[in-house]
Length: 123
Image 1 (cartoon, one colour):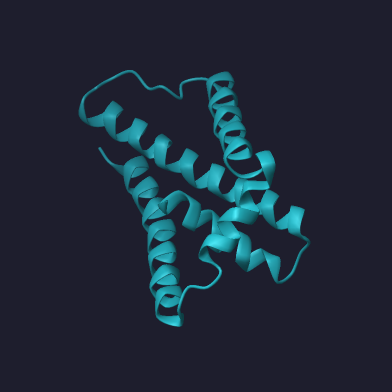
Image 2: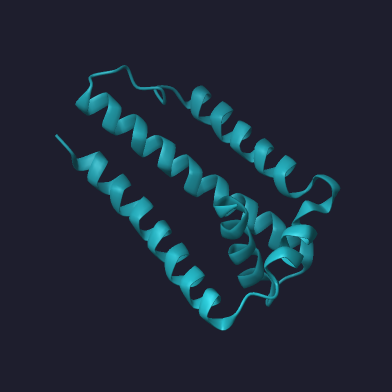
């Protein structure tokens, strides 16, 4: 549910400027990038705190994992045009819920990148 809402907000923001399919692709790529940053951050913390071997140790593994994330997002949002059902599901939310959603999404994205930079500099 939260993942769909994040997609919806990214999609809706782009929908005002671009076509339907361009907006879907942008939202999926953005979600893939954010998801990858979250997993990469988790991998860095686990490696530095628990001294586990890093998962993202080679570019091939990074490409495979990004491909898996992108494939999952394509399946979640493009197959049978699920993005249309998601848009319909959230299209009549109140102004208050929109504001809360906007705040939550912005906070999530900012915290994701802050945690990434903290993990890189964590000793």
